[in-house]
Image (cartoon, rainbow, N blue to C red; front, side):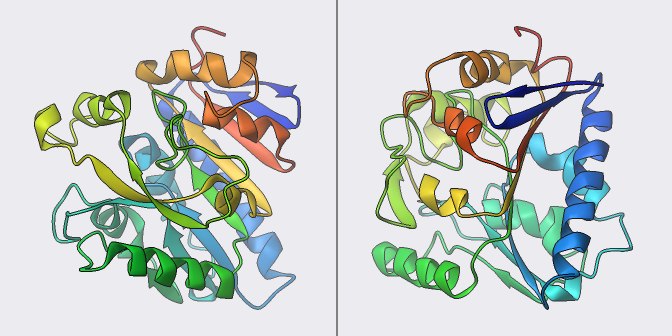
Length: 252
């Protein structure tokens, strides 16, 4: 493993996805235990993507975490997809972690809600009631965090949760990662936590493997901090760490 600081962001590079996931899980676990020594319960936001699989698999194996003192949230969801569908981000997280450890509460975004704006308001109210302590996230091929694609990213967004149109790079990534068979199958709209909502966290752990993320990682670390590559904002976030493997770091 090698590491370096880029502005306020700690960057750690591992040889394999497995090593990266295990290391991130270990550090998240230590953070959870540290925070729980200071308060009765904590609130966590998780990302749903294949990039998170090794990390989540390692995290659920840690039997020392008092999950019954943790409230869980997730950061985005497709509009028009029911949580029973495997492509649903809530479904992914249910299979990967929410059903495997005994959280105090699990709070789902409902992509099939009859009134999507009301659903955004409902979830925003929950985020206000349960201020976030830890965010575990990835980045997209277009540099997005959550579903804040460059066209909709706003570092000063007044909202906590909003509806966005997904760009073609973002939608194509879902096909690359075998979440959908074709581009036509990928929804065009989603709900997402905004960038300010994510940045409210005390700690942020960004887990980014895979060769298809190498260009985005290079832009994230070497480009100008701007909404053109939303992930660049992590370089201004104290107590944040980026975990890479040999593929995602190959252009650095």
